[in-house]
Picture (cartoon, rainbow, N blue to C red):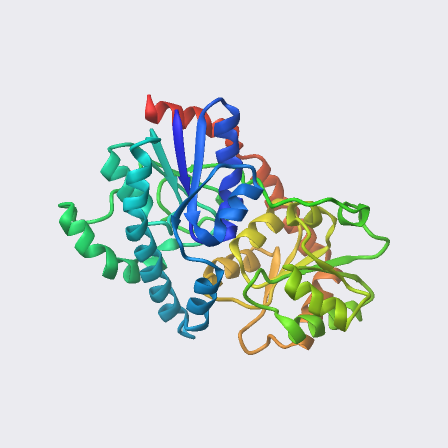
Length: 367
């Protein structure tokens, strides 16, 4: 079997699809993973063959992010248009690739609209693999503005539904009316590096990790946040890309800052502070760590759900100053109920079938 994974247009989607892609390859099948120029190093970093679908790089992505509408609905519509444009533009390069390496199966995330189109063109099954707990339907209105002419040309009134829908959200956190799916255990995966003992060893005091991905908690704000949390008497680790981490170390040499694989670091943490990113949220949940969601974007609904479940605190938009973050961290550290609830969700995730158990389902689709 040849399986083509097209997870999406950010590193986070690559990391969250890596476990199933690796399981398929470990079962003896051929696996390619495709993505825009920006994510190709991330695909390679998780040990998978990388195929370029588009020349879009980090500068292009940052330019798009800088021009995003401020309101969540407008941001979701704009993102949906871009996701659809990338999917449509990627179709011809992927069809050309298929002339030499024809997949028997296409696996894509709900945000990668090209997966359904490619499977339709090649007449092969397609599998929708969720990469986080997010509701991708918020992107559909913007996406359909781009996809409508393409679908009309294919004689379709809507995007084809998946032949198999795999969800990684713990059942207790799934919203009412969620689409029918099979549930798979979420297994974290990250680019790795040479590990130092402190990265996988619990400290002699509570540890708080701050991760803002590549989009938020930049520069001076990140350094001030780290200092305010450190004043609680905890060890602070800033997991950030090197250009951002260097600024933090220069401002406060006592803070451990740099690229640390979150799947290694998370089990040693007592709290993880982040911006509502799906990969950080899912990794924290899988490791049983309470979360502080300090900045939200279009993922606010899903982040509110884990806060309502008692495993996180989500700050309101008007209470996201450094002092608010430190105060919420203190609450998470002092209240054992958050840790207990986070561990319950981790146990629920661990009880789901693992990626290896999904391979047979994929084989049956192809067979």
